[in-house]
Image (cartoon, rainbow over all chains, first blue to last red; front, side, top):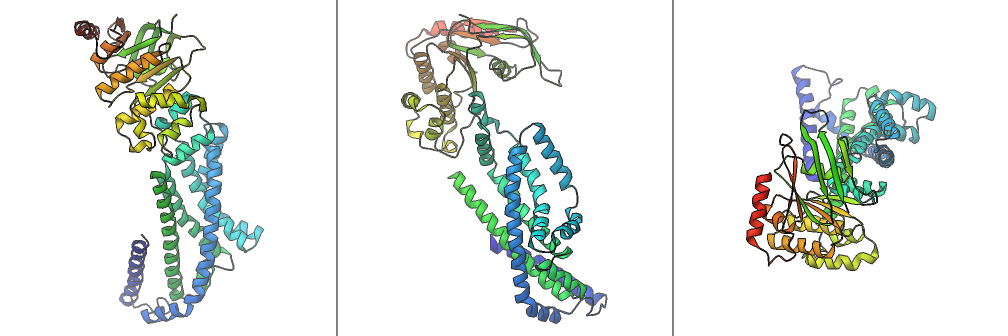
Length: 248
Length: 231
């Protein structure tokens, strides 16, 4: 699983770098715009350890933000699964909020909370949470009639049993949604760091942008790709373990 | 004592022109094993779910003693898959009913499967497991919509006889397309017809046999002929 995902990423990454180099030579662009392959390699080696630490910092925030989003999405999703006015309100609010580009709110958060961990975490959660919530609500509000009928007919249904049935029956969908939202958590964290934070790989990219140093940006992108692949693979593995356990 | 009565039921599915029932009348007077018979697509399931108060929006009325508990089960139902079917059934009955459960398990030939998960069972075993858990509930009338589908004929006969023996005071309404089975085992046979043919329901008397081995074949054939004429 990891092998395949890393292989796919490296292929796409290499294709991207190659097209940049090709563009450089075809359009006779200077090293200032697109550095040569040797310069990219040298820069990558020089920043590798520092960027690795930065990526680890970003990944840590993304994982925590993702976990918080999952917990919140399930808590609110369970409350919002009902066809009551609370459910409708939660659904409508989540639908409208997730349609709004959260990154535009990031400056307000940085003004209010400063540029520390809390602001990065909050933006990561906000970007990841709302699409996740919508998916969780739609999965958990879908009745599994063939299983639920007996409990409804005999008056044994309660919300815990209902959630258990729906989560169990849709475990594949839920794990897919959780794995998919991990990318959103990573994106949210990097965007937050890029906008105003003072740490993480997004912050390093911002500095590299100010220096117009494409080599550093490419090195950062490589490490982001590798770390995201590792995280997604870990989640997929966990999802498979849970699914296998359910199918046992 | 009347068990259930449908009076002048008319119904069409919402937002469609499909008329399902037109002034439909039928009744079941006594406890016992009865049948609802008719070609596919005429509304047997809809009528059964109306009787179990799972569908509304019809005109006319369905009368039954309000204290009577009517349950509806169908052959597409599944047990949750997170535990063995034995544990799932036990979790939905009082502890004191565990002995009854064992008895039904044996009578239905399900003892070897009780430690298996639902998805590991054959279709016939799934239907029997589902029926067992309904039989262990508190009910006065159980509507069995193709509940013995995919069960072999011999076992089906044995199960029906068991139901008639162990639950003699209860009312069963059995929906099946097996005319021979309906003619042999059922007491009242409610034959449902197209809404263009009035009356939409004809009630016949089945052979209501209590022993799968000894019955009069000519009498069963006569009942089957009546069912064919009625439907």
